Length: 543
Ligand code: VG1
Ligand code: CO
Image (cartoon, rainbow, N blue to C red; front, side, top):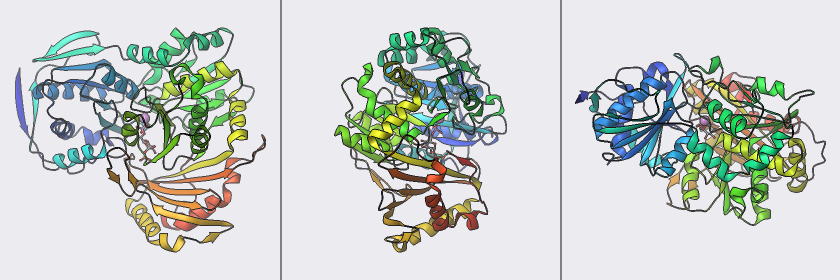
Protein backbone atom coordinates (compact mmCIF):
# COMPACT_ATOMS: atom_id res chain seq x y z
CA UNK A 1 0.00 0.00 0.00
CA UNK A 2 1.67 3.14 -1.17
CA UNK A 3 0.77 6.77 -1.75
CA UNK A 4 1.25 7.63 -5.39
CA UNK A 5 1.67 11.08 -6.85
CA UNK A 6 0.14 11.05 -10.31
CA UNK A 7 1.02 13.68 -12.91
CA UNK A 8 -2.01 15.31 -14.53
CA UNK A 9 -3.09 18.24 -16.66
CA UNK A 10 -5.92 20.71 -16.14
CA UNK A 11 -9.18 20.23 -18.05
CA UNK A 12 -10.07 23.91 -17.66
CA UNK A 13 -13.80 23.17 -17.51
CA UNK A 14 -14.30 22.30 -13.85
CA UNK A 15 -16.29 25.37 -12.89
CA UNK A 16 -18.98 24.47 -10.34
CA UNK A 17 -22.48 25.77 -11.15
CA UNK A 18 -25.51 26.49 -8.96
CA UNK A 19 -24.95 23.24 -7.10
CA UNK A 20 -21.52 21.67 -7.58
CA UNK A 21 -19.83 20.35 -10.70
CA UNK A 22 -22.17 18.61 -13.14
CA UNK A 23 -21.12 16.90 -16.36
CA UNK A 24 -21.95 13.91 -18.48
CA UNK A 25 -20.76 10.61 -16.95
CA UNK A 26 -18.45 10.12 -19.96
CA UNK A 27 -16.64 13.34 -19.06
CA UNK A 28 -16.21 12.27 -15.44
CA UNK A 29 -14.90 8.89 -16.62
CA UNK A 30 -11.98 10.41 -18.50
CA UNK A 31 -8.66 9.52 -16.88
CA UNK A 32 -7.79 12.01 -14.08
CA UNK A 33 -11.00 14.04 -14.48
CA UNK A 34 -12.67 13.17 -11.17
CA UNK A 35 -9.28 13.02 -9.46
CA UNK A 36 -8.34 16.54 -10.57
CA UNK A 37 -11.52 17.97 -9.16
CA UNK A 38 -11.35 16.04 -5.88
CA UNK A 39 -7.70 17.02 -5.39
CA UNK A 40 -8.66 20.66 -6.00
CA UNK A 41 -11.40 20.42 -3.36
CA UNK A 42 -9.04 18.81 -0.85
CA UNK A 43 -6.43 21.48 -1.53
CA UNK A 44 -8.83 24.37 -0.95
CA UNK A 45 -10.41 22.64 2.07
CA UNK A 46 -6.98 22.09 3.65
CA UNK A 47 -5.80 21.43 6.21
CA UNK A 48 -7.79 18.28 5.65
CA UNK A 49 -5.26 15.88 7.16
CA UNK A 50 -6.46 14.57 10.52
CA UNK A 51 -10.08 15.55 9.82
CA UNK A 52 -13.41 13.73 9.69
CA UNK A 53 -15.34 13.71 6.41
CA UNK A 54 -18.69 12.35 5.19
CA UNK A 55 -19.16 10.79 1.73
CA UNK A 56 -22.22 9.47 -0.04
CA UNK A 57 -24.30 9.84 -3.15
CA UNK A 58 -27.68 9.33 -4.74
CA UNK A 59 -26.79 5.91 -6.16
CA UNK A 60 -26.63 6.99 -9.76
CA UNK A 61 -24.35 5.37 -12.31
CA UNK A 62 -20.66 5.88 -11.40
CA UNK A 63 -21.50 6.57 -7.72
CA UNK A 64 -19.73 3.42 -6.49
CA UNK A 65 -16.58 3.83 -8.58
CA UNK A 66 -16.30 7.51 -7.68
CA UNK A 67 -16.56 6.76 -3.95
CA UNK A 68 -13.70 4.25 -4.09
CA UNK A 69 -11.51 6.83 -5.84
CA UNK A 70 -12.44 9.52 -3.31
CA UNK A 71 -11.67 7.21 -0.37
CA UNK A 72 -8.24 6.37 -1.76
CA UNK A 73 -7.49 10.03 -2.39
CA UNK A 74 -8.68 11.03 1.09
CA UNK A 75 -6.43 8.35 2.61
CA UNK A 76 -3.50 9.76 0.62
CA UNK A 77 -4.21 13.24 2.07
CA UNK A 78 -4.04 11.94 5.62
CA UNK A 79 -7.77 12.32 6.36
CA UNK A 80 -8.33 10.69 9.78
CA UNK A 81 -11.76 9.19 9.25
CA UNK A 82 -14.56 8.99 6.71
CA UNK A 83 -18.20 8.12 7.26
CA UNK A 84 -19.66 6.50 4.15
CA UNK A 85 -23.28 5.60 3.57
CA UNK A 86 -23.92 1.88 3.12
CA UNK A 87 -23.54 0.96 -0.55
CA UNK A 88 -22.35 4.53 -1.07
CA UNK A 89 -25.85 5.91 -0.51
CA UNK A 90 -26.70 9.12 1.34
CA UNK A 91 -29.24 11.77 0.46
CA UNK A 92 -28.11 15.38 0.31
CA UNK A 93 -29.99 16.39 3.48
CA UNK A 94 -28.73 13.25 5.26
CA UNK A 95 -25.14 14.22 4.46
CA UNK A 96 -25.83 17.68 5.81
CA UNK A 97 -27.33 16.20 8.99
CA UNK A 98 -24.41 13.80 9.48
CA UNK A 99 -21.78 16.52 9.04
CA UNK A 100 -23.52 18.56 11.72
CA UNK A 101 -24.19 15.71 14.12
CA UNK A 102 -20.68 14.24 13.90
CA UNK A 103 -18.97 17.65 13.71
CA UNK A 104 -17.21 16.66 10.50
CA UNK A 105 -15.02 19.10 8.60
CA UNK A 106 -17.20 18.63 5.52
CA UNK A 107 -18.60 16.16 3.07
CA UNK A 108 -18.73 15.13 -0.55
CA UNK A 109 -22.07 14.40 -2.20
CA UNK A 110 -22.09 12.50 -5.46
CA UNK A 111 -25.16 13.52 -7.39
CA UNK A 112 -26.46 15.45 -10.32
CA UNK A 113 -29.70 15.89 -8.39
CA UNK A 114 -32.76 15.93 -10.67
CA UNK A 115 -30.75 15.30 -13.85
CA UNK A 116 -31.12 11.81 -15.39
CA UNK A 117 -28.53 9.10 -14.63
CA UNK A 118 -26.87 6.27 -16.55
CA UNK A 119 -23.76 5.78 -18.71
CA UNK A 120 -24.86 8.49 -21.17
CA UNK A 121 -26.42 10.82 -18.63
CA UNK A 122 -25.19 13.04 -15.81
CA UNK A 123 -22.92 12.83 -12.80
CA UNK A 124 -21.88 15.45 -10.31
CA UNK A 125 -19.99 16.32 -7.14
CA UNK A 126 -20.82 18.82 -4.44
CA UNK A 127 -18.67 19.76 -1.47
CA UNK A 128 -20.32 20.78 1.79
CA UNK A 129 -18.54 22.65 4.53
CA UNK A 130 -18.62 22.12 8.28
CA UNK A 131 -21.96 23.83 8.83
CA UNK A 132 -23.39 21.07 6.62
CA UNK A 133 -24.18 23.42 3.75
CA UNK A 134 -22.93 23.81 0.20
CA UNK A 135 -19.55 25.51 -0.05
CA UNK A 136 -19.87 29.25 -0.73
CA UNK A 137 -18.94 30.80 -4.07
CA UNK A 138 -15.56 31.98 -2.77
CA UNK A 139 -14.68 28.33 -2.08
CA UNK A 140 -15.93 26.94 -5.39
CA UNK A 141 -14.18 29.73 -7.30
CA UNK A 142 -10.92 28.87 -5.56
CA UNK A 143 -11.44 25.18 -6.42
CA UNK A 144 -12.01 26.10 -10.06
CA UNK A 145 -8.90 28.25 -10.15
CA UNK A 146 -6.78 25.50 -8.61
CA UNK A 147 -8.17 22.92 -11.05
CA UNK A 148 -7.02 25.13 -13.93
CA UNK A 149 -3.41 24.87 -12.77
CA UNK A 150 -3.31 21.39 -11.30
CA UNK A 151 -0.26 19.28 -12.16
CA UNK A 152 -0.58 16.26 -9.86
CA UNK A 153 -2.79 14.48 -7.37
CA UNK A 154 -2.25 11.97 -4.60
CA UNK A 155 -3.91 8.59 -4.32
CA UNK A 156 -3.34 5.50 -2.19
CA UNK A 157 -2.62 2.35 -4.15
CA UNK A 158 -4.91 -0.16 -2.49
CA UNK A 159 -7.88 -2.47 -3.02
CA UNK A 160 -11.48 -1.22 -3.01
CA UNK A 161 -13.31 -1.28 0.31
CA UNK A 162 -16.51 -3.26 0.96
CA UNK A 163 -19.32 -0.70 1.16
CA UNK A 164 -21.96 -3.32 1.79
CA UNK A 165 -21.16 -4.22 5.36
CA UNK A 166 -21.92 -1.77 8.16
CA UNK A 167 -19.12 -0.95 10.56
CA UNK A 168 -15.49 0.11 10.75
CA UNK A 169 -12.60 -0.74 8.45
CA UNK A 170 -9.33 0.84 7.40
CA UNK A 171 -7.67 2.09 4.26
CA UNK A 172 -4.00 2.76 5.00
CA UNK A 173 -4.07 4.83 8.18
CA UNK A 174 -7.52 6.22 7.50
CA UNK A 175 -10.49 4.84 9.39
CA UNK A 176 -13.65 4.17 7.44
CA UNK A 177 -17.05 3.64 8.93
CA UNK A 178 -19.86 2.38 6.76
CA UNK A 179 -23.02 3.84 8.29
CA UNK A 180 -26.72 3.19 7.89
CA UNK A 181 -27.79 6.08 5.64
CA UNK A 182 -31.23 6.47 7.22
CA UNK A 183 -31.02 6.21 11.03
CA UNK A 184 -29.44 9.57 11.95
CA UNK A 185 -31.77 11.37 9.56
CA UNK A 186 -34.88 9.54 10.79
CA UNK A 187 -34.05 10.44 14.40
CA UNK A 188 -33.75 14.11 13.45
CA UNK A 189 -37.16 14.03 11.76
CA UNK A 190 -38.76 12.39 14.81
CA UNK A 191 -37.45 15.26 16.89
CA UNK A 192 -38.97 17.95 14.64
CA UNK A 193 -42.41 16.53 14.01
CA UNK A 194 -45.24 15.01 16.01
CA UNK A 195 -44.81 11.42 14.88
CA UNK A 196 -47.54 10.14 17.21
CA UNK A 197 -50.08 12.43 15.66
CA UNK A 198 -49.08 11.50 12.12
CA UNK A 199 -49.16 7.83 13.11
CA UNK A 200 -52.73 8.07 14.40
CA UNK A 201 -53.73 9.76 11.16
CA UNK A 202 -52.36 6.78 9.21
CA UNK A 203 -53.95 4.39 11.73
CA UNK A 204 -57.33 5.92 11.04
CA UNK A 205 -57.05 5.15 7.32
CA UNK A 206 -55.33 8.19 5.83
CA UNK A 207 -53.84 7.16 2.50
CA UNK A 208 -50.99 8.74 0.54
CA UNK A 209 -48.46 7.92 -2.14
CA UNK A 210 -44.83 8.96 -2.09
CA UNK A 211 -42.92 8.67 -5.36
CA UNK A 212 -39.20 8.11 -4.74
CA UNK A 213 -38.66 8.05 -8.52
CA UNK A 214 -36.15 5.19 -8.14
CA UNK A 215 -33.82 7.62 -6.46
CA UNK A 216 -32.29 8.09 -3.03
CA UNK A 217 -35.37 8.79 -0.91
CA UNK A 218 -36.75 5.26 -1.41
CA UNK A 219 -35.05 3.73 1.65
CA UNK A 220 -35.68 6.85 3.75
CA UNK A 221 -39.36 7.04 2.89
CA UNK A 222 -39.99 3.32 3.40
CA UNK A 223 -38.38 3.45 6.83
CA UNK A 224 -40.00 6.68 8.03
CA UNK A 225 -43.43 6.56 6.37
CA UNK A 226 -44.14 2.84 6.33
CA UNK A 227 -42.06 1.33 9.14
CA UNK A 228 -42.11 4.12 11.73
CA UNK A 229 -45.31 6.04 10.96
CA UNK A 230 -47.37 3.04 9.94
CA UNK A 231 -48.41 4.07 6.44
CA UNK A 232 -49.65 1.07 4.45
CA UNK A 233 -47.02 -1.03 2.68
CA UNK A 234 -46.86 0.19 -0.91
CA UNK A 235 -47.27 3.82 0.13
CA UNK A 236 -43.81 4.47 -1.29
CA UNK A 237 -43.69 3.80 -5.02
CA UNK A 238 -40.56 3.40 -7.16
CA UNK A 239 -38.80 2.84 -3.86
CA UNK A 240 -35.66 1.04 -5.01
CA UNK A 241 -32.79 3.34 -6.04
CA UNK A 242 -31.57 2.44 -9.53
CA UNK A 243 -28.41 3.60 -11.27
CA UNK A 244 -30.47 5.08 -14.11
CA UNK A 245 -33.56 5.94 -12.04
CA UNK A 246 -35.51 3.51 -14.20
CA UNK A 247 -34.78 5.64 -17.25
CA UNK A 248 -36.69 8.69 -15.99
CA UNK A 249 -35.81 12.17 -14.82
CA UNK A 250 -35.81 12.03 -11.01
CA UNK A 251 -37.35 15.49 -10.98
CA UNK A 252 -40.49 15.90 -8.87
CA UNK A 253 -42.68 18.08 -11.05
CA UNK A 254 -45.95 17.59 -12.91
CA UNK A 255 -44.15 16.46 -16.05
CA UNK A 256 -41.66 13.96 -14.67
CA UNK A 257 -43.67 12.61 -11.73
CA UNK A 258 -46.62 11.82 -14.00
CA UNK A 259 -47.21 8.41 -12.39
CA UNK A 260 -47.87 10.07 -9.04
CA UNK A 261 -49.99 12.80 -10.62
CA UNK A 262 -52.17 10.09 -12.13
CA UNK A 263 -52.56 8.35 -8.78
CA UNK A 264 -53.86 11.58 -7.24
CA UNK A 265 -56.25 12.47 -10.05
CA UNK A 266 -59.88 11.73 -10.60
CA UNK A 267 -61.63 9.88 -7.84
CA UNK A 268 -58.38 9.11 -6.09
CA UNK A 269 -58.23 6.87 -3.04
CA UNK A 270 -55.39 9.03 -1.71
CA UNK A 271 -55.56 12.34 0.11
CA UNK A 272 -51.93 13.29 -0.30
CA UNK A 273 -49.16 12.78 -2.83
CA UNK A 274 -45.49 13.71 -2.68
CA UNK A 275 -42.29 13.08 -4.59
CA UNK A 276 -38.61 13.83 -4.22
CA UNK A 277 -35.67 14.12 -6.60
CA UNK A 278 -32.44 12.21 -7.33
CA UNK A 279 -30.57 13.28 -4.20
CA UNK A 280 -33.59 13.80 -1.93
CA UNK A 281 -33.50 17.54 -1.44
CA UNK A 282 -36.55 18.52 -3.53
CA UNK A 283 -40.24 17.91 -2.91
CA UNK A 284 -43.50 18.13 -4.77
CA UNK A 285 -46.74 18.31 -2.79
CA UNK A 286 -50.07 17.19 -4.23
CA UNK A 287 -53.58 16.91 -2.90
CA UNK A 288 -56.44 15.14 -4.62
CA UNK A 289 -56.52 16.75 -8.08
CA UNK A 290 -54.50 19.57 -6.62
CA UNK A 291 -50.94 20.81 -7.14
CA UNK A 292 -49.30 23.01 -4.52
CA UNK A 293 -46.78 25.34 -6.14
CA UNK A 294 -43.47 25.23 -4.28
CA UNK A 295 -43.70 28.98 -3.63
CA UNK A 296 -47.13 28.55 -2.03
CA UNK A 297 -45.89 25.56 -0.08
CA UNK A 298 -43.13 27.70 1.44
CA UNK A 299 -45.60 30.44 2.36
CA UNK A 300 -48.01 27.94 3.94
CA UNK A 301 -45.19 26.37 5.93
CA UNK A 302 -44.14 29.79 7.19
CA UNK A 303 -47.71 30.65 8.20
CA UNK A 304 -48.20 27.39 10.13
CA UNK A 305 -44.75 26.44 11.43
CA UNK A 306 -45.54 27.45 15.00
CA UNK A 307 -48.09 24.60 15.18
CA UNK A 308 -45.34 21.99 14.83
CA UNK A 309 -43.10 20.82 17.70
CA UNK A 310 -39.79 21.71 16.00
CA UNK A 311 -40.92 25.27 15.33
CA UNK A 312 -43.21 25.97 18.27
CA UNK A 313 -41.25 29.08 19.22
CA UNK A 314 -41.97 30.67 15.85
CA UNK A 315 -39.60 31.75 13.12
CA UNK A 316 -36.70 34.17 13.43
CA UNK A 317 -37.13 35.13 9.79
CA UNK A 318 -37.60 33.59 6.35
CA UNK A 319 -35.83 33.72 3.02
CA UNK A 320 -36.59 32.87 -0.57
CA UNK A 321 -34.54 32.86 -3.74
CA UNK A 322 -35.18 35.87 -5.95
CA UNK A 323 -37.24 34.06 -8.64
CA UNK A 324 -39.45 32.40 -6.01
CA UNK A 325 -42.88 34.03 -5.75
CA UNK A 326 -43.43 36.69 -3.12
CA UNK A 327 -46.14 34.64 -1.36
CA UNK A 328 -43.87 34.08 1.65
CA UNK A 329 -43.16 37.82 1.84
CA UNK A 330 -46.83 38.38 2.59
CA UNK A 331 -46.69 35.90 5.46
CA UNK A 332 -43.50 37.44 6.85
CA UNK A 333 -45.16 40.84 6.79
CA UNK A 334 -48.12 39.56 8.81
CA UNK A 335 -45.84 37.77 11.25
CA UNK A 336 -43.67 40.84 11.59
CA UNK A 337 -40.47 38.99 10.67
CA UNK A 338 -37.78 39.68 8.10
CA UNK A 339 -37.95 38.11 4.63
CA UNK A 340 -34.62 37.91 2.77
CA UNK A 341 -34.30 37.66 -1.01
CA UNK A 342 -31.25 35.67 -2.10
CA UNK A 343 -29.84 34.51 -5.44
CA UNK A 344 -30.79 31.05 -6.72
CA UNK A 345 -29.00 28.18 -4.97
CA UNK A 346 -29.06 26.87 -1.41
CA UNK A 347 -25.55 28.09 -0.56
CA UNK A 348 -26.93 31.62 -0.18
CA UNK A 349 -29.13 30.58 2.76
CA UNK A 350 -26.19 29.21 4.79
CA UNK A 351 -25.05 32.43 6.44
CA UNK A 352 -28.62 33.53 7.19
CA UNK A 353 -29.33 30.19 8.91
CA UNK A 354 -26.01 30.14 10.79
CA UNK A 355 -26.60 33.66 12.03
CA UNK A 356 -30.16 32.77 13.10
CA UNK A 357 -31.57 35.47 10.85
CA UNK A 358 -33.95 32.89 9.37
CA UNK A 359 -35.52 29.58 10.40
CA UNK A 360 -37.24 28.63 7.15
CA UNK A 361 -36.31 29.12 3.51
CA UNK A 362 -37.13 27.90 0.05
CA UNK A 363 -36.96 28.11 -3.70
CA UNK A 364 -39.53 27.90 -6.47
CA UNK A 365 -37.68 24.86 -7.83
CA UNK A 366 -39.37 22.44 -5.41
CA UNK A 367 -36.97 23.13 -2.57
CA UNK A 368 -37.71 24.04 1.02
CA UNK A 369 -35.89 23.59 4.28
CA UNK A 370 -35.16 24.93 7.72
CA UNK A 371 -32.36 25.41 10.20
CA UNK A 372 -32.35 21.65 11.04
CA UNK A 373 -29.78 21.13 8.26
CA UNK A 374 -28.08 23.39 5.72
CA UNK A 375 -29.63 21.87 2.59
CA UNK A 376 -33.10 21.80 1.22
CA UNK A 377 -34.84 18.68 2.39
CA UNK A 378 -37.46 16.77 0.42
CA UNK A 379 -38.73 14.28 2.97
CA UNK A 380 -38.68 16.92 5.70
CA UNK A 381 -41.14 18.99 3.63
CA UNK A 382 -43.36 15.94 3.19
CA UNK A 383 -43.37 15.27 6.93
CA UNK A 384 -44.07 18.96 7.56
CA UNK A 385 -47.17 18.70 5.38
CA UNK A 386 -48.23 15.41 6.98
CA UNK A 387 -47.93 16.96 10.42
CA UNK A 388 -49.98 19.93 9.24
CA UNK A 389 -52.65 17.68 7.73
CA UNK A 390 -52.82 15.72 10.97
CA UNK A 391 -53.33 18.92 12.96
CA UNK A 392 -55.73 20.72 10.63
CA UNK A 393 -57.72 17.67 9.55
CA UNK A 394 -58.45 19.45 6.28
CA UNK A 395 -57.67 18.53 2.70
CA UNK A 396 -54.57 19.91 1.00
CA UNK A 397 -56.69 22.04 -1.34
CA UNK A 398 -58.64 23.45 1.60
CA UNK A 399 -55.47 24.45 3.42
CA UNK A 400 -54.13 26.17 0.32
CA UNK A 401 -57.33 27.96 -0.65
CA UNK A 402 -57.80 29.21 2.90
CA UNK A 403 -54.25 30.48 2.81
CA UNK A 404 -55.03 32.39 -0.40
CA UNK A 405 -58.16 33.83 1.12
CA UNK A 406 -56.10 35.15 4.02
CA UNK A 407 -52.95 36.35 2.26
CA UNK A 408 -53.97 36.76 -1.38
CA UNK A 409 -52.76 34.54 -4.19
CA UNK A 410 -49.52 34.72 -6.14
CA UNK A 411 -50.20 33.12 -9.50
CA UNK A 412 -46.89 31.75 -10.58
CA UNK A 413 -45.19 29.68 -13.23
CA UNK A 414 -41.77 28.97 -14.67
CA UNK A 415 -41.05 28.29 -18.32
CA UNK A 416 -37.87 26.38 -19.17
CA UNK A 417 -36.30 26.36 -22.61
CA UNK A 418 -33.78 23.54 -22.41
CA UNK A 419 -30.65 22.75 -24.40
CA UNK A 420 -30.73 25.91 -26.45
CA UNK A 421 -27.58 27.10 -28.16
CA UNK A 422 -25.29 28.73 -25.54
CA UNK A 423 -24.44 31.63 -27.81
CA UNK A 424 -28.12 32.33 -28.49
CA UNK A 425 -28.85 32.20 -24.75
CA UNK A 426 -26.00 34.54 -23.85
CA UNK A 427 -26.96 36.96 -26.61
CA UNK A 428 -30.53 37.01 -25.36
CA UNK A 429 -29.43 37.85 -21.82
CA UNK A 430 -27.03 40.47 -23.15
CA UNK A 431 -29.80 42.01 -25.20
CA UNK A 432 -32.04 42.18 -22.13
CA UNK A 433 -29.29 43.79 -20.09
CA UNK A 434 -28.82 46.46 -22.71
CA UNK A 435 -32.58 47.06 -22.88
CA UNK A 436 -32.97 47.66 -19.14
CA UNK A 437 -32.76 51.45 -19.14
CA UNK A 438 -35.19 51.63 -22.05
CA UNK A 439 -37.67 49.26 -20.40
CA UNK A 440 -37.91 51.27 -17.21
CA UNK A 441 -41.33 52.99 -17.05
CA UNK A 442 -42.70 51.34 -20.20
CA UNK A 443 -46.24 49.99 -20.29
CA UNK A 444 -47.20 46.76 -22.03
CA UNK A 445 -50.84 45.86 -22.21
CA UNK A 446 -51.66 47.72 -18.94
CA UNK A 447 -48.59 46.40 -17.13
CA UNK A 448 -46.11 49.16 -16.30
CA UNK A 449 -42.49 48.35 -15.46
CA UNK A 450 -41.76 50.16 -12.24
CA UNK A 451 -38.27 48.84 -11.72
CA UNK A 452 -35.94 46.53 -13.59
CA UNK A 453 -32.40 45.41 -12.88
CA UNK A 454 -29.66 42.83 -13.07
CA UNK A 455 -30.08 41.28 -9.62
CA UNK A 456 -27.14 41.67 -7.26
CA UNK A 457 -27.02 40.33 -3.70
CA UNK A 458 -24.99 41.53 -0.78
CA UNK A 459 -24.80 38.90 1.94
CA UNK A 460 -25.91 40.61 5.17
CA UNK A 461 -23.55 38.47 7.25
CA UNK A 462 -20.21 38.51 5.41
CA UNK A 463 -20.96 41.37 2.96
CA UNK A 464 -19.87 39.28 -0.03
CA UNK A 465 -21.43 40.45 -3.29
CA UNK A 466 -22.94 38.16 -5.94
CA UNK A 467 -23.67 39.92 -9.21
CA UNK A 468 -25.58 38.92 -12.36
CA UNK A 469 -28.08 36.68 -10.59
CA UNK A 470 -30.90 37.20 -13.09
CA UNK A 471 -32.84 40.01 -14.73
CA UNK A 472 -35.95 41.18 -12.94
CA UNK A 473 -38.81 43.25 -14.24
CA UNK A 474 -41.06 44.51 -11.46
CA UNK A 475 -44.45 45.87 -12.50
CA UNK A 476 -46.46 48.50 -10.68
CA UNK A 477 -49.20 46.02 -9.71
CA UNK A 478 -46.68 43.70 -8.02
CA UNK A 479 -46.35 41.36 -11.00
CA UNK A 480 -42.85 40.17 -11.84
CA UNK A 481 -40.98 38.64 -14.76
CA UNK A 482 -37.52 37.16 -14.14
CA UNK A 483 -35.03 35.76 -16.65
CA UNK A 484 -31.96 33.73 -15.84
CA UNK A 485 -29.78 31.02 -17.29
CA UNK A 486 -29.57 27.72 -15.43
CA UNK A 487 -26.35 26.73 -13.72
CA UNK A 488 -27.10 23.02 -13.47
CA UNK A 489 -27.66 21.87 -17.06
CA UNK A 490 -25.09 19.81 -18.94
CA UNK A 491 -26.21 20.45 -22.52
CA UNK A 492 -26.14 23.87 -24.16
CA UNK A 493 -28.00 26.44 -22.06
CA UNK A 494 -31.35 26.44 -20.29
CA UNK A 495 -33.29 29.68 -20.19
CA UNK A 496 -35.65 30.00 -17.25
CA UNK A 497 -38.45 32.57 -17.34
CA UNK A 498 -40.37 33.12 -14.11
CA UNK A 499 -43.76 34.84 -14.21
CA UNK A 500 -45.81 36.02 -11.27
CA UNK A 501 -48.98 38.00 -10.65
CA UNK A 502 -50.46 38.86 -7.28
CA UNK A 503 -54.23 38.83 -6.71
CA UNK A 504 -55.13 40.25 -3.28
CA UNK A 505 -58.79 39.21 -3.41
CA UNK A 506 -59.34 35.60 -4.32
CA UNK A 507 -62.53 33.72 -4.48
CA UNK A 508 -62.19 30.00 -3.93
CA UNK A 509 -62.82 29.34 -7.64
CA UNK A 510 -59.99 31.33 -9.18
CA UNK A 511 -58.82 31.01 -12.76
CA UNK A 512 -56.24 28.65 -14.20
CA UNK A 513 -52.67 29.83 -13.71
CA UNK A 514 -51.69 29.81 -17.38
CA UNK A 515 -54.79 31.86 -18.26
CA UNK A 516 -54.31 34.39 -15.50
CA UNK A 517 -50.68 34.78 -16.52
CA UNK A 518 -51.30 34.73 -20.30
CA UNK A 519 -50.71 38.46 -20.84
CA UNK A 520 -47.57 38.49 -18.75
CA UNK A 521 -46.26 35.37 -20.51
CA UNK A 522 -46.71 37.11 -23.83
CA UNK A 523 -44.98 40.22 -22.52
CA UNK A 524 -42.10 38.08 -21.25
CA UNK A 525 -41.72 36.43 -24.64
CA UNK A 526 -41.91 39.69 -26.56
CA UNK A 527 -39.48 41.65 -24.39
CA UNK A 528 -36.81 38.93 -24.65
CA UNK A 529 -37.67 37.99 -28.25
CA UNK A 530 -37.64 34.38 -27.07
CA UNK A 531 -39.37 32.84 -30.05
CA UNK A 532 -37.36 34.55 -32.75
CA UNK A 533 -34.03 34.17 -30.96
CA UNK A 534 -34.36 30.53 -29.87
CA UNK A 535 -36.59 29.27 -32.66
CA UNK A 536 -38.78 27.70 -29.95
CA UNK A 537 -42.46 28.44 -29.80
CA UNK A 538 -43.09 26.60 -26.52
CA UNK A 539 -41.12 25.90 -23.37
CA UNK A 540 -39.91 22.34 -22.75
CA UNK A 541 -41.15 22.30 -19.19
CA UNK A 542 -43.72 24.45 -17.41
CA UNK A 543 -43.75 24.27 -13.63
C1 VG1 B 1 -31.67 24.71 -10.16
C2 VG1 B 1 -32.77 25.44 -9.42
C3 VG1 B 1 -32.24 26.02 -8.13
C4 VG1 B 1 -31.62 24.89 -7.29
C5 VG1 B 1 -30.58 24.15 -8.11
C6 VG1 B 1 -30.03 22.95 -7.39
O1 VG1 B 1 -30.64 25.60 -10.49
O2 VG1 B 1 -33.33 26.45 -10.22
O3 VG1 B 1 -33.27 26.67 -7.44
O4 VG1 B 1 -31.03 25.40 -6.13
O5 VG1 B 1 -31.15 23.69 -9.33
O6 VG1 B 1 -31.04 22.07 -7.02
P1 VG1 B 1 -30.51 26.27 -11.95
O7 VG1 B 1 -29.24 27.07 -11.90
O8 VG1 B 1 -30.47 25.15 -12.93
O9 VG1 B 1 -31.73 27.10 -12.13
V1 VG1 B 1 -30.67 20.43 -6.88
O10 VG1 B 1 -32.02 19.68 -6.28
O11 VG1 B 1 -30.33 20.20 -8.54
O12 VG1 B 1 -29.28 20.28 -6.01
CO1 CO C 1 -31.60 17.81 -5.74
